[in-house]
Length: 249
Image: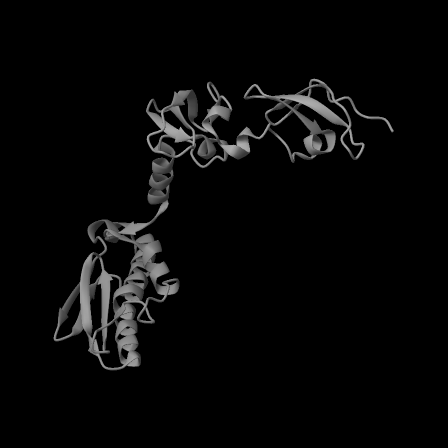
C-alpha cells in the first residue's frame, strides 16, 4: 500500500518532520514538532482527520506547555506577550492590543475558540447598532413593546406582571414608559390575569395601534404631522386608565 508522504506538512500546531515507526497495528506514524517546541509521534490517520493537532499542550492547559501566541491575531486583538496570571488558575493569559488602541489580558482558550475578539468595543458597537435600528416613538421602543405582548415568559406566579403575596393572594402590576402601576390585589389567579390583560390592552396594544394610526395619517398629511407630534398621554384615577392621543385613526 502506498503511503502519502506527510513530511513538511502542518496539522494544527504540529509540523511533520519525518516518518516514524509503524504502531502496533501496523499503521504509519510520523514524528512531529509541536508549536510549543516538543516532538511527538502521531499516526497519519489522526493527523489527517484532525483528531490530533498538538503534542497534548492544548489539552492539558499547563502553563509550561502553552503554545506561544505572540504576534497572532484573533479578531481585533493582536497578542503582545504572555501575561502573569492574576488568579491561582492554571489557565494562560495573554496581553493583547485591540485595533481601537486599548490593551487587555485574555485567556488563551477564549482567544483560540473565538470567544473574545476585542477589548469589548465590538460588543458595544453591536449593541449600539441594534439600538439604532430599533424604532422609538415618544421615547418608547415599539419592538420591545410588541415583544412584551407575545413573548414574555411566565414568572413564578404563573403569569407576567403577577406576584404571589404571603397570604396567597395575587398582586398585578404593569410598567409603561418608565411608570410602574400596581393594578390591585386579587384573591384568585384568574382575576389577577384579567386585570393585567385589560391594562395591556390599554397601555401596550393601545399605544401600538395609536402609533400605527398616527403614522398612516402622517404619511397622508406630512404638514399636519410636522405641526402635531405624536402623543399618548395616560392618566389613572380610581383604578381606571384614561388615554388622550392624536393617534385615533
